[in-house]
Amino acid sequence: MADNASRDEEICLRRTRVDGAPKHDSFLNKDGLLLRSYGWLVKNAIGIIILIHGIKAHARLNFLKPNVEVVSNDKVIVKDENNYYVYEDSWVEYFNKHGYSVFGLDLQGHGLSDGFENLCHNVKEFDDFAYDVMQYIRNIQDSLNDGTVDDGGSSLPFGEDKICERRKPLPTYVVGLSLGGSIALRMLQILGKSQNENTGLNIRGCISISPMITVEKLPSKNSFLFQRVCLPLSKFIADRIPTVRLIAMYPYKMYPYIKYFIEYDKIQSKQAITCRFGYELLKAIDNLDNDIKYMPKNIPVLIIHSKKDILCYYEGSLSFYNRLDVKNKEMHTLVDMEHILTWEPGNERVSKKIVEWIMGLSSEGGAASEGGSISEGSSTSEGSSTSEGSNTSEGGSTSEGSSTSEMVSMGSASL
Image 1 (cartoon, helix red, strand yellow):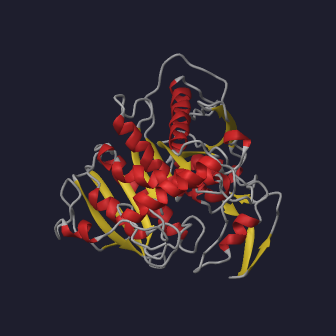
Image 2: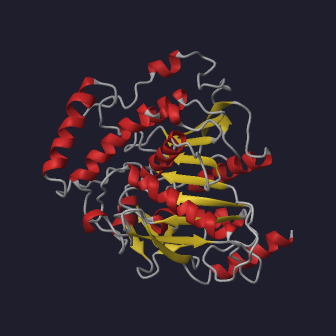
């Protein structure tokens, strides 16, 4: 009770700064790029949540609330452009209230971080995103293990006081949105390939939201068109005009005003991604599918996706889930939201689902029963999601048989 009271007091004080007064920090990645990061910390944290934002966004834009008033689907009024990121009623505040210290970084080429070849929305290789996040988590855990504390007894990786004894690493949960959801999954695959799996990270769960496992307008990943036309052609273009920008579009249908949340942000560049970045996205789709066998079996995975997502294909996530061979997995399907689930009406139901799922893992000591489940939730209904599917056996096949995954073609949308 004392811990909860202390957190409530801290959160009340944090609201005096619109953005929640995050701890600002930075680090150099393996290629010498300076990456900016932010931490919203609580006293006596029970765990760490790492946020990975989406494409053409940044940590504070995706996971705090834009300081705007939505007048209609076509009109948004900015309340204060100099204080554009609001902590109150955001996902960050919700996670803090439940005892988790929250950290997020601006991916390279996004927000205030450096970009490859000094360009925004550009990357040398997609996997560099995953390596950056892993380095960031290790930095946080190393700082905690070094005994960095403040005078209130909370674990703060950015403080100055040190003690000699090493602390037990806090459980870490990775939450990725859209591009970030794909990065989170790819990071697990890279860890699964390595001999020192999860060393220094202590990842206890992965939440992938609207992940870019495939894109609505792409042909099936295993099709001749994708393998023999899309990939080679995009590589050809990227090799010859790597820094030329692709066309930028905001095809939001259910909540078209969301495009203004992005356009009115002063930090994020409005330029489209480069041809090199575009090719790396296609290659990432291919790698995620090919390397699914490397997903660590002991790290639980929650995939949250809406059937009405118009950017990242829901059926691709379902196919990935059905073939995912981990001991604990869940596919949570939404039917009344679209793509950017941190902003849309009903987003508080999604954050509630995430916390309930994480706490369920914690109550079981980080190891849940083998198998998985498919559930369907509504952002408008009270309470937790209602079960739509039955438990699955280890290996990812549903009780309906392997034909479920065979019938779902990953990314079957046409060009």
